[in-house]
Image (tube, rainbow, N blue to C red; front, side, top):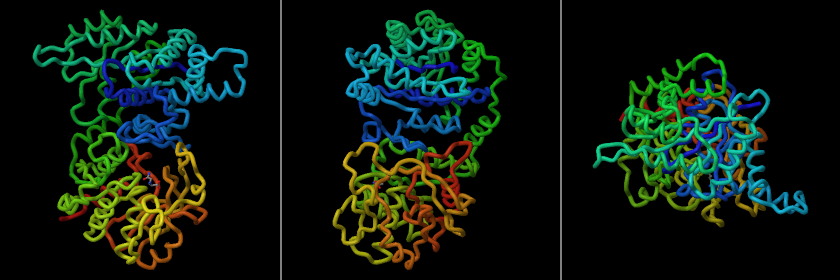
Length: 533
Ligand code: GLN
């Protein structure tokens, strides 16, 4: 039987609950525990797959093809273990399951209610993580305590505390302790009130993690302890980290958070082994070189839209003991003639995945700049599709080459809908999703980067390189370096006569980890470091 840790958030959103949960995951693994992580989202979409990056940031894809919350990316990066379809669910999915059962007649004769039907369904989804051999299930509750839509989730986790026994369940509340400049002091009232809200429901937190910009004095800790009913040693400070998010597990461990958990659960485990992690942080803090990479995206102003891409680029840098400076370039503005100097002087250019028309010509132009100037280039998903369009138009001379996502009747539909996608009507969960095998051609840059010719990578797309143009592309020098094992789908392309120009139809960024940088990002950043201007 697994123990449960529930992480709630108070006062404001965007406190970094996902990073805190992921760091805790790393600490527990470092103490030799087997864990599972879960993110629960109280909104009504069945999953985030159809949500805009403006609403939700990146959609993270698991091996088994679930479109999930970006916090799962943090979980995988910090813990080094894969998440799955079970690792994220929303209120929408819960209601959907309950309503399907109701229509099926499963509750025949009964009134279907928030308690117990919705709460039972939530509990069943949480308990599904309690698999054979799992010691601790870490559950992050999305949203902020006090939100109406989060109430059933809080009620469900309160019930789990009662059912499993308080010794087997821990509640950790992440809160914000603001520093008021004019008064020259930090304020504990918002935290007191958010804990009061939790206690109203019947949840008494066992530890408080306080986000703050300044150090908390002993007096402040004592005050928080008294008013929030948490022992002083369990009032943990989470000040903004100086250098990198990867410092966080160390910050929490230094204050004994993992020890507090061991004591609560009466688990006797050796101290956390964090040698490798410390070495990683040390490498990040003391880089030996710097690379500058331009990321040409549609959402250049958004932090979260390309979360895994940015992290994977940094990881690529870690592999070379290098710091990577990322320049976010708005694809649309390239169309207005801007940013050409930025592109030309970059160590490397990356075009990430995306959907729709906006910015696509800017991305195609950026790829042309990379191709013609020998600038290392990595294209991902839509980035590969744009690279193929650029090659078709400017190397093969196929005027009007386009993806049919943008122009249905393009004169040269070099990227088009996959056959099985033609009849798809619903938009949610119907793309080509999850891990698929791919065979790499020997002697290519792709094969050299991976060091193998058989790989498996995660996908999220509907469109694909049009096979009718394969011969034409190859004749003109495009190397089709990765193909699906059945020979039907082009998964990777590259250029022979270029320092490093590689694109993939899948999303390698989802599998990159700080302790295991992804081969393509490692090779791409490596090539960018070599670029001499
Ligand atoms: N819009 C493209 C497709 O559906 C690319 C998707 C992506 O970049 N994730 O195929």
